[in-house]
Image 1: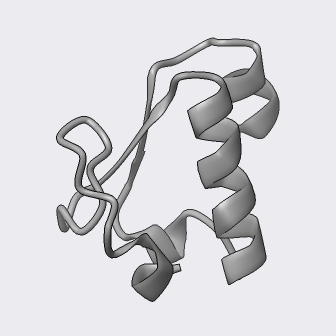
Image 2: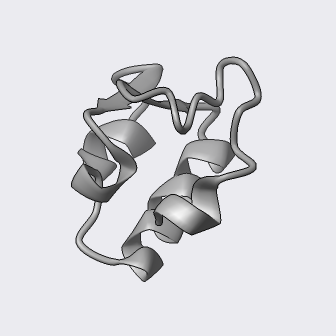
Length: 63
């Protein structure tokens, strides 16, 4: 997924929950930073994180 994201093959990363996106907090933050650098959005189905709407204030808690 990270390789494809860096190649701009998609615009949004969808996950059931943020905890399903990465195995640990460090990787969660790496994915978040990579998404910001490549203009990708992260959205979770539980709507805890939704960068399309600017809902990122709880990222640290869920990471």
